View (cartoon, rainbow, N blue to C red):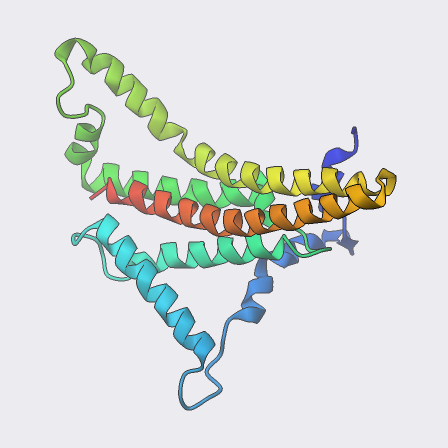
Length: 224
């Protein structure tokens, strides 16, 4: 049990450089390319996914946003989705289960939103600190609460993704380690449970990528 989290350690070193993090860009090899005169089915699916995400993000951000803003969040969604799915394969390092990656993406996003909002729309940012309909006696407390909730946003974004990725992988590891001591009948139940858990983890990989990108979009919509 003391070595339980060792499966998440980036331990592959070549020339004192951890090569596990190279799994972060493994999705680039799966991006469909235009080899054909007419689009392939993969390209059509890819374009439909990007268009669907663009329409949804555009609705959340609003019409006052800059053109091309949704491309940032579509790119984040695709990157997170690929990394979450790649981590489900054996011997592939799950980079999104580490705060070093999730926090380094969430913090610059949140910082850029805050700087843009406070520099260009200062009055609008102040109005967000006091929700509409707040009693005068609670205004000072609401400013404090809203400020704290705003400050912890990058941390909650990073922890939410990393914790969900670690939880599923850890449960699969614990179930897999008990296989040596089980009988044949219990082994079949264990395999069935692992298959069901892997299906759940596939859904979690997609949902967590969507949650990360949709929350980033909502945070950016507050600065306009």
